Length: 255
Image (cartoon, rainbow, N blue to C red):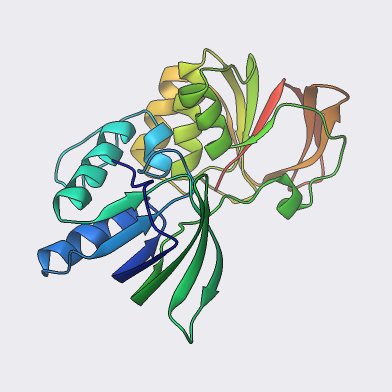
């Protein structure tokens, strides 16, 4: 599927930066309108974005009207885009965009490439707020993840995040992290959120906590990460200023 044989310069109608669900769905929609000269560029090794390594059900319900596991959903979107005439270039990074000349500079294993397009679409998705963006103090041991890195570790690299994890955040992605941790045989010590309640569907919260029996600590924040080489725990503080330490060997920042 990846298009790695390319000249030093290409001209296309539309270039889409990002081969996740948004970029692939856009390419399919353009194909339905008769616009098939579309090039999709992504820095990852395969198209599909986050669902490719989010290996659980819940995808496809709104757009495809059927529940699918993440990797199957990603593959379906990529295949649909290609059938519509789009080309996908993977392991390629956009290093410059010229809005005036309608060109982008791309660096790939085969070399540098200039793409000139009538329309340039940026569909690079969003990023979770990591520990640094949340200004959480403490040491810098191994074992601190975002959900995305956790899922890449478990589902793509078949690695282990540890045995006991604290999840920071309580929305949709947080419950996705629960599924990934349990798949890796890692217990959830607690889910911690500074909000007064979770921000996901009540059925997600009830089902996950009923099955795996972890506490949801609301109006609570992580004030410090503990450990030298590996996470040994986190210090938390509730709305009344009371502090305690949760022992764990990994921390997952979500949302």
